[in-house]
Length: 345
Image (cartoon, rainbow, N blue to C red; front, top):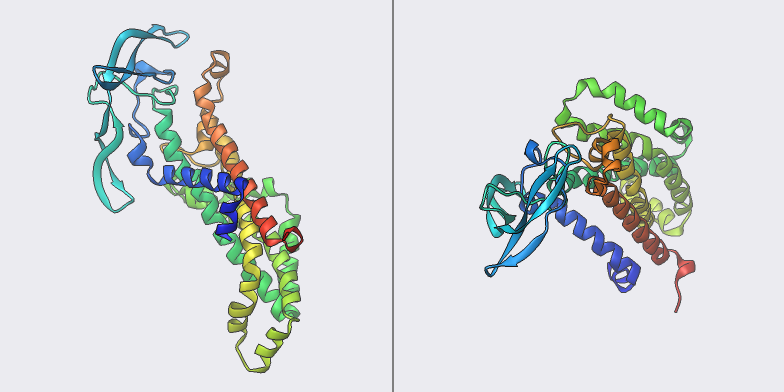
C-alpha cells in the first residue's frame, strides 16, 4: 500500500508534507534557535528577520525600533549578525536520549536576535513555539486515533462476533454516545477532568477526552463489518476446528479490517487536530507554559495584530490548515487504493 501511495502524485505530496511536519516536531529542539518561553520585551511584535551575505558568511539583518506604539522596525543598512551553523545554544535532550546544546542555526552575538517568523507580544520566537507546539497538535491526533481504533475494534468486533446481550448493551452505549452533542460533551468532560490535572498533564487529558468522544462511530461500523466477515467460510472452518474466539478475531477478523481502519484513522486524525485547536483556542486546552497551535492562535486574538498586520502570528492557523489538507488528501488516496471499485487495469 505504501508503494501505491508513493506512485500517485497527490499521495506522494501529502505523505511528504506529513513526514516533514512530524520530523520538524521530533527535531523541534534542534531546529529551534531559542527556548519556547524566552522573552525579550524590547523586541515585541518583531517582524521576521532578513538574511544577507557579507564577509563570506550568512548574516541576520539588524533592526531598530522606530515607533514603539505601532511596533514598527526598520532595517539598519549594512549591519548584521553572523549566523553559526550547528552552534551552541540552550540545552535539551535530543530524541529524549542524550543531552546536547547544538542547534541548526544560532547567533553567537548575544546583542542580536534571529526571528525566522517574528516574535509575539512578549518577544518570544514564533518559529520556536510553532515547532514545539507541533509536538502537541500533531501527536495528539496519533495517540487519540490509536485509542479510538482500539476501543472501536474491541467493542465493535466483539459485538459483531459474539452478538447476544453483549451486542445489545454495547450498541445501546454506542447509540447513546453518538446521540450526545460532540462539542457540549467535549466541554463538559474538559471541565470535569481539568481540576484533577496540572497544566503539564493537560495533553493527556485532551487525548482522553477526544478518544472518548470519537470511538462510538468506529465501533458501529466495525460491528457491521464483523457481522459480514463472520459468515465467511474460512471463519466457520476455524470455528469447527476448535480455534478460540480470540485467535479467530486476531487471525481472521482483524486482518480484514486493517484496510478500513487505516483509511478511517487517516481521515479522522484531522478531527483530533482541530479538536485540540478548538479547545486551546477557547482557553480550555493546552495552557502556558506549554505551547500548541490552538493556544498560539488564541493568543493572537488582538485587534492590534490585525490592525497593524502582524501576519506572522497567524502562522499556526496555516500549519493547521496544511496538516488537515494533507491528511484528507492522503486518506482519499488510501480509500481509492483500498476500494475495489476504484481499481483499474
